[in-house]
Image 1: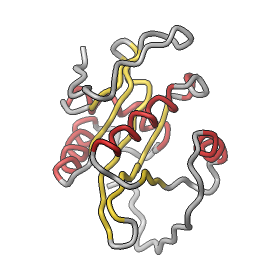
Image 2: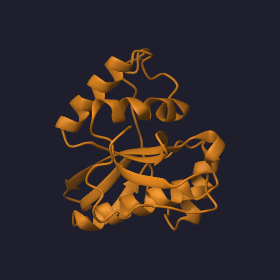
Image 3: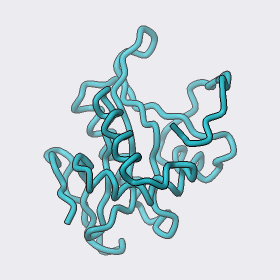
Length: 169
């Protein structure tokens, strides 16, 4: 069974309207990280098929400050978010969400909202001034979700693609 670690301040989420008792915590063990792969693959289909490669990649990212928060329904991870705390000269200290996804069949049941609430609590705990994220222009469902949750558009992101990365590395 995956372990939920360091959940102090996040609370245990339970709701009778949702599929089962839900738990929110950090995915830190290799088994927990691997358990996030099916959920993340729904958002990023090009993730590696090799679970060991995925776990190694996330472990490397965690060494540079990334954290992986997950929502468990029983033993299954049904939502997760990859995030990091950043500080820069313009925005100060903020929690940046790189990925946030709920399993397709469970969307619009409040799970993503609970996960976002836990991330906001984490940002406050880590003395951040804001929570920020990017969302693909074509992902209108996510836009609706973030607007409904009270987030607002504060800028545009621009990118120069330097090379194609077919392996997602």
